[in-house]
Length: 237
Image 1 (cartoon, helix red, strand yellow):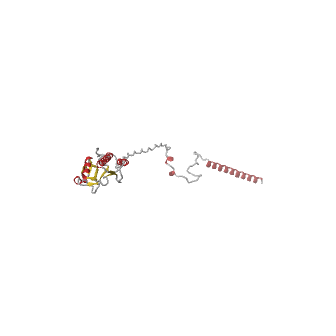
Image 2 (spheres, helix red, strand yellow; image 1 turned 90 degrees about the vertical axis):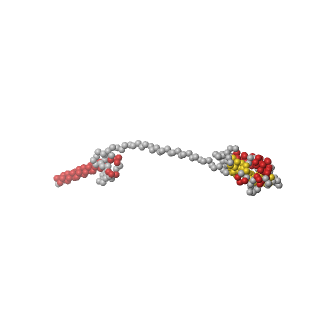
Image 3 (tube, rainbow, N blue to C red; image 1 turned 135 degrees about the vertical axis):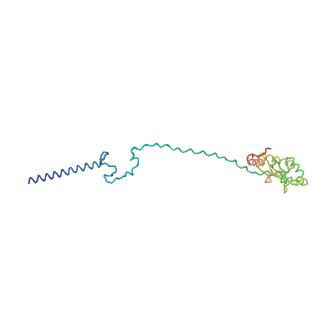
């Protein structure tokens, strides 16, 4: 009986020792798995939790990891954008001259029409010449600066015919720009009309048939200035 007891105690001791050694083995194994290091043969960076299948394939790794040398830092030079080309200066052409038409009427006193011969004499004394359209013109370089016509249609002032006729008045008209600088042309136009009006008598009226006073002269002269700058082919008086 005593012998059997010792046998059972021996077997129990062996079992306990085996359990103890097995526990120490599992404890060390788990510790190695939790704290792997690069020198350990059990460490594999391609395995997850000690599994048998790699989580990454070599083909998935970037080339820098597989290269023999560490990747070199490449300094990126700043990209300089080309300076914008300077836009060519815009050459603005001067605005086209504004065309202006000036009209004056010389009206004889009521019931006292002008004698044709007196009209011809006054026109010639002012330096006007008979010409195109059978009327009188101020000429510059062979071109009309302004003109004078009969107030009676068809407006002609043929000297031989007018010498035997009478007329209630004259029409002076000028279109700018013309062959003479605008302001010089207007001043000559206004002075000539006033001179003939002084020679023949009567009233000068504008295109609205209103009497021309100093304010009207200034207004018309300002309009002449709007006819534009002097033209290259202008003839200076």
